[in-house]
Length: 148
Image (cartoon, rainbow, N blue to C red; front, side, top):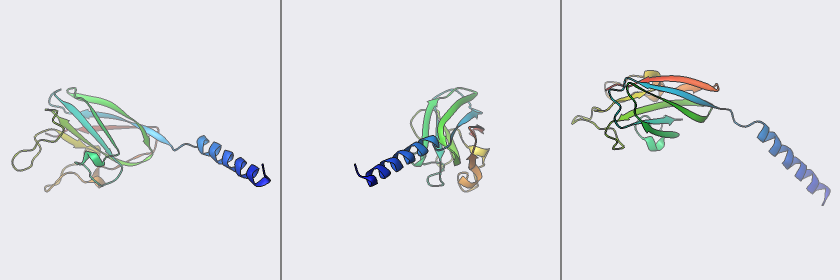
């Protein structure tokens, strides 16, 4: 083994050990979804780490959870989330068909809500900017009240 090989091996071992000693900081979100009108179907929770797709395109979310609905509120924990900026969208999929049902003019027939309980505008859903929050501690407690 050459002197250069020994140096490179030592440097590699130091970098690996140093990176393992400082893993990225992560936290969890304790979420209460309230104002459910019944315990039918599922609650879909989508965590977005960017504006892209918010709030309706769950396939663009950072993390998606589907859990059984419980009335009048559903409580869940979203684990293993790196510190950063996020917005959460929630749907009460009462008939468990995997989508938000709307009436003839496109108004939601099922319950929905977003973080910060941001309101929908006259012309569309709540904005990412109004719903965004910072996860910068081990645990973040949030409450989202559904609108029907």
